[in-house]
Image (cartoon, rainbow, N blue to C red; front, side, top):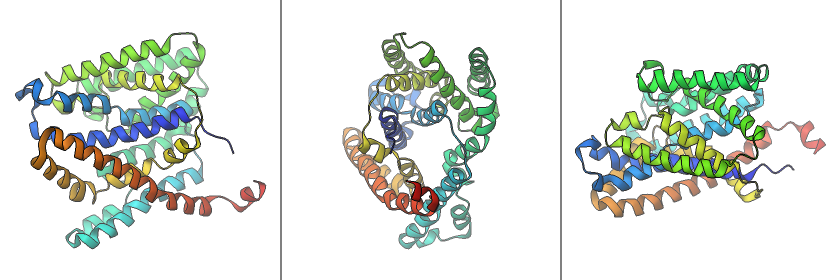
Length: 336
């Protein structure tokens, strides 16, 4: 069996850990909004953590663009069933402890897991998968120079018009437009790294990453918090690219890392479920912050975050095994 490139699988794990960090850190940060009303000494730790971890979503899509989504009917079916598995199952489990959530509107959310807006990534990534054959076809039929032009144009549209001018089509990057943009950047990154292997990518990327983190923290002192943390903030896009390239410079294979990464998406599906995050995790984290504040909250929430990641990964392994049995064709298994 072919072992996948573990540096990118490790990056997938790190990206999901960053997503958890952003959500947990946001519970604390939002208690101080607007940030400009508070001194830097009060919030530097939370701002640093946010600046470092905000790139998680972009990293996930960059990985998809770097390798390319090869859409198949089985792959699309697996994605839909994966989402619905947790959308319905978690809702029923949570309702056992919170019967007041057993309402028609929440039931509708559960059975329409792909389209439910509380998990915007699920919906947008589904659209990206559906559109991927068109995007791939366009990129395969054009030259590298044209790819650079496409990337430049999408940067102007998404970062300039969307983020800077705050046009409603992509004001914060929580859209399929942004995913298409990042997906294309991932494609161009692969070509660029292959074309110029002797360029000092590691040194340049480390410098760009550190400067980008500092720039995001500086922006938080002068701009609205939710504008700064937009995924299409050009500084955050640059930070995402730099961090991605750092990992791309390594090459190793590790089956355990690949084993963990194969179900990392379940961590998002579970902890951000519409009945779990707003009704269980977020109130619990808010109470912990109110009780312990600052350093105490950082330690306890970090422990909870690690526990969430480990539990979600282990919980998803039986689902992965079941789907493999159901979706793998008998003919393919016989050939193996």
